[in-house]
Length: 407
Image 1 (cartoon, rainbow, N blue to C red):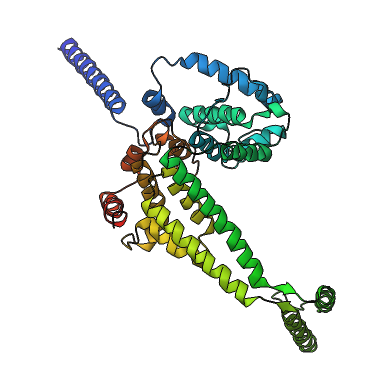
Image 2: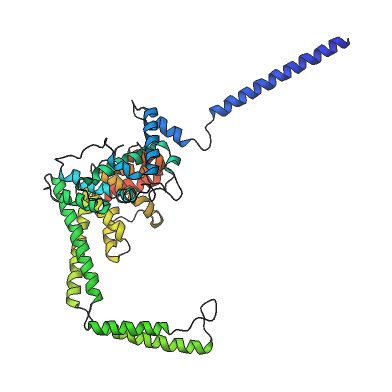
């Protein structure tokens, strides 16, 4: 009886062990089947965008070799013999796009020429290229090679800014032939005329000194009075009663000098009025470019102008044209949606928006955006649809494109 009881206990223990083992196996399989909350971006990117015939092992070896060399001397990359020669008979549009591309190269090439990591000011602070998803590493490698190619240091002038100027001269030396190229050339001239006229207006509004020696003397007196200010007696910058009287007296004298400086200015009001009228005319011309041009490059060039000048009052009417004059997009979403709307419009005008385009590369290498790696190797519009726009935001963009630009 005792033996039978022991046998039963042994059988129960074996069954319990087997059940426990099977449960653990099923649990492990379930965990493997479930997507992790934070997927491995690098491995996903490898599976997503690696082109057919791509030799991953070869690329990694070459990449590691270059990294080892450049850590010692980045300038050696300028002697890369595999760089493709520049097109000897490019079109006006091709050379213009090379010039625009190089704007993302100036800091990279300047770093190399100063024997520093080319990506020092490109990546976020304390970020290493090896920490990036593979697709972004590849995009940076590709950009670096093209930047070096476009630098064209065959003339032995090792200066990134000089190379950028040379690229501008390159497209300006070619006559625009197609209708789109001619529209682009006219838009670029309008932009240059606007910048020149606006600078003249700023100078005219400041006026000119009638007596230059008096101007220098007055500023010298002003500095002397400022130097006579007593030091604050409190941590909040306050003065005791006697010092406050001195400060008030000095401020009154400084105010008198400031008025004398203004009285010594001559402002040509007729010239100011004339330049103001010309600025308004040029803004009107640029507005027509935004709405009517079929050149995506002209359209993007005007948008770049307002991106850099949005704080100026006279740019607001021009900026409004990028939403077709429609106030559909709420103010709090403008900074988020308008750049996307502009890219939709540029793609609609047949601007390159595919996997190899500059617009995609810029999104891919936008390291402030955690979704940036998803743009690498993607179509630009698909990237926005998949990772940015809600249905309501997409409605806003489509409404502006269909109603604003057609009105």
